[in-house]
Length: 433
Image (cartoon, rainbow, N blue to C red; front, side, top):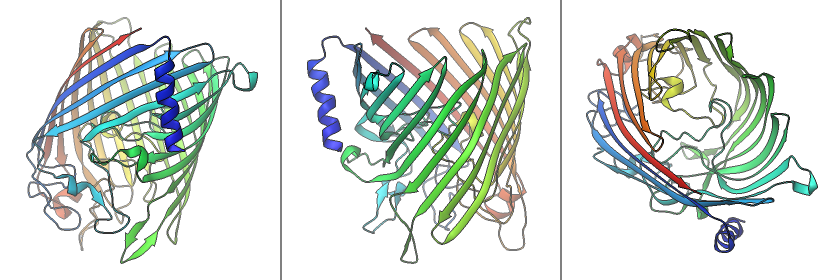
């Protein structure tokens, strides 16, 4: 099936009579202080007690995308490749191998991908002569809503979720119902993912029904199954997860804004039965008549002890720009201020109050737990400052600074230091039609 999809994509490219080309370049510098992707603390000791990398890296990241697209009345095609590189990290590619030294070993490298497929898909419109029904097959990124339930995770250099999937979509009156099945790839820079192991399979129904011009309700169902087992003491186990929920939002009702999501998870992790939930509640107001059009948002993000994210992005727009958190065993009370000084500049300032939902569980991102004698929940406080400048349609410059002040859980059971993270990023993209 993988070979057929790839062949169809290449044949379509050869015989396309009307092509558009695209190119995207992203260069980024990251300064890390007090942590890295595998361990928190100046000593870089991970949850298993091993020293992994250093805590003060300066990393250069590059991602290049290039491809072609074309559209006809009945068919759309795209073939887009990307290449992601990294220089300066103290972590090696072996640090990102899971199930190491077993037949089930695979890699999830967040930094590096060598000449990899981003999109190789065919879309058939007006399927079965139904005008609003389409089918998209092949490698694709899939995005819904705010990317919290389903989203690729594009901030990561090697991109989080990319799918080999078949997706039906029915659109009507500004609404849609999508249903699809697919598998997610692993991320090994030395192997072409189309012909390698897939990490998960998923079946999804996601819908969107407008309630107002800028408001909607989005019910969804997600099935998620691990195709690669987790190994513990030589025993294999697989995860089977079911999620049901709804997102309800309004982006502008006389200046008022709200965004709410609720998800219930019923799952089996090996022999363990899981019934847990998570939610997001945000609300705010924008003063459009004032200079810089300030917008203020208050929110609470919660996930109970054993809840795990479906196929959503964990990029810093959701859980802080430090990228220390994931949507599992966590609570985040937050306040954000948005300012728009000019048409070319956006700014955002955010405060996060992070805690564990259950002190008996793990800090989900790293796997640390309370040491014996401690029952702390408070992880810490994070402050983020973000500046985005777009001098032209083709260029975007980003500057992000984040500071994390360690709370009792981190100080007592992980490492007695705070941390900071700085991003400087340049993007350039063109599309010729």
